[in-house]
Length: 397
Image 1 (cartoon, rainbow, N blue to C red):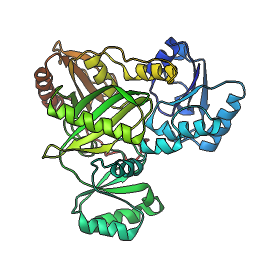
Image 2: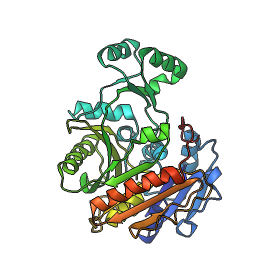
Image 3: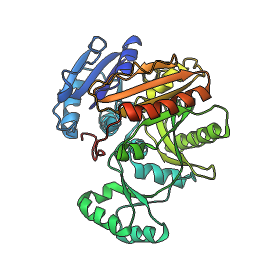
Image 4: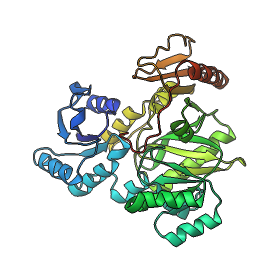
């Protein structure tokens, strides 16, 4: 089997290695700016480079280049290794008629408006929202729903480009600023509550593994106000755990994920009701794969490669997961190469090695011990490391 991987960002190494172990030929298309990055080249049959400005590729050039490649390579799968590569992969699949998620379904896993419309039409709880398109409908939404609101780009990842809007005057000023780009946004009710994520493995529309986690400070607040990012595995078999996993099952069924991995986010209102925020057909960023692997022993990238190899034609089972608990803590750091050696508890199982970042993962059979360590470490990180930068407006900022 030949798998064509698209990577406009430097990620997906474990997918590439596992695909190679499974006997696949891996072709990698990446950005010219990443030509010298430390890719696992021993596992890659051939590499191709796309001219890029801030990781932006011209789709017509990509279609032409891959079509020329397909004259001599029989491409069996096309896999996007980053959220921003999903549309490229679906366009290539449609053009080359390669099996996998097409452009319509891809919209549900990339376009925040499309996923909300589909989930709401299937009766699933979502925040109130309106497309920033028809002015009368936007005004009606503002009259019906009190601020604050979130103004969100439809096709960015995470908290990138999101703006919190406190008045209608502020909203119309922001829409005027967006100009012709306003239709690429939606306006959404601000929902207070704890934010969760569920990381899932799906094969032939069946969820084979799903693990629920809860953020500390919501990601939007960290990205816009600074501070320490934390998340931890939810205590299993509780109403909290069962509630978010059940909504996650309904969401992935509604949006039509056939096979692959998904990172989805939910919010829990004060009354305990879970609300769907957004989903994706990819491995979660911000080192969430490492968190899941620490708790379960399951590497989401590797499982995704095994799923692509099986392709619906062969049996697939997730490697038996452990049932430990784990917590992740990350922050921007004032120091170029911060040292976390003083964080020496035996539960520390992973340390982040990245310029101007500090990060750890702790693991324990005890949920309470993980909570205790995250609380202690968060206060220490704030003192030892934390730096702040303006929030990103685009992924290349």
